[in-house]
Length: 387
Image 1: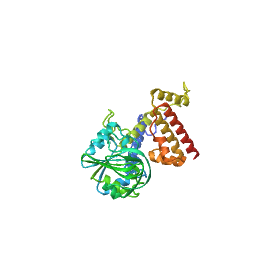
Image 2: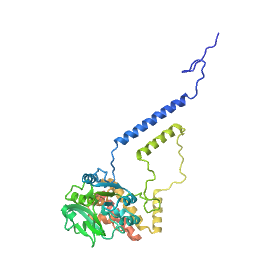
Image 3: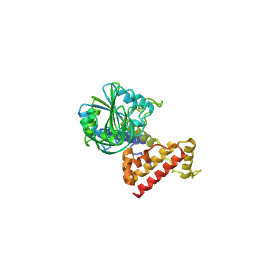
Image 4: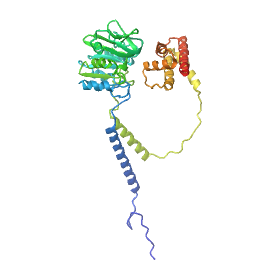
């Protein structure tokens, strides 16, 4: 009797089964997964909205954005170029253009020195508390004003065309500039000439926002100020701009577009999951040392005291209080100082000036001043809790 022949599934009798069927199936699954990833990235790129959530950005449609202003300027024939680095602003802001610099007080000294020499007309906006030198010495930032309607009260043509504007927050003063929309605390708008260049400053950035542009004569003032030339360079400083730090000129170290980087990351993840070995369960081991949070806080405080860093410690205390109270009173994490002051003043029952002095006043210079500030912050915290 002849022994039966055992035939492997999928093979002919007498043929040797191949050993690479399983790898081929794996490669097919991998190819399918990569194809689906590519398709998903392409669809997301085609359907994605080109907007952001950066305050006063020309592509931000939120109330604190400024897309409405940018769209109207483009409809009037003004070319709007949006930049986030000092190097890009210097490259774009040539003669016959307008350079809009937002939050100029946040720039480092090297950045201000470079921007002070541009050939373009300059408009400073959303001017916070801080020194503007060496960018300009013609105006300075003083006090804090309640947001309200103010008449032009000057002979600047842009201000006269606007008639009245609604603004508040930091105010401007100076002896060598035309000051407009002034109140008891100071002016909300200033204009002056340096050489053959026109300089203007709009203290309250809310005037440019989607929420504030349509109020009173805000639109007329902003459109005339920013639309004086056919080209507008919209410079919104970025915190990670390396200009003047010796780490580069502000160019992107990763020139690949975002979707390409996402695709590469997804491909890498698939390869890791495909080729990687399974890991065992996580082993929990006790830490060799347990450090209490209170000990860490005391240690950091001693370091600040030894270094005499009263201003740094005060800034940390103020920022910590604002962060704690923000969620309690419904403030967004990126709220500007004037919004923080207005909201906490309502919550605590204090005046806006008193709240501003506690949160944004001059930093202490000695231990006694730091202790007094700590007590004032603690009192404000308790008042907001009671409110």
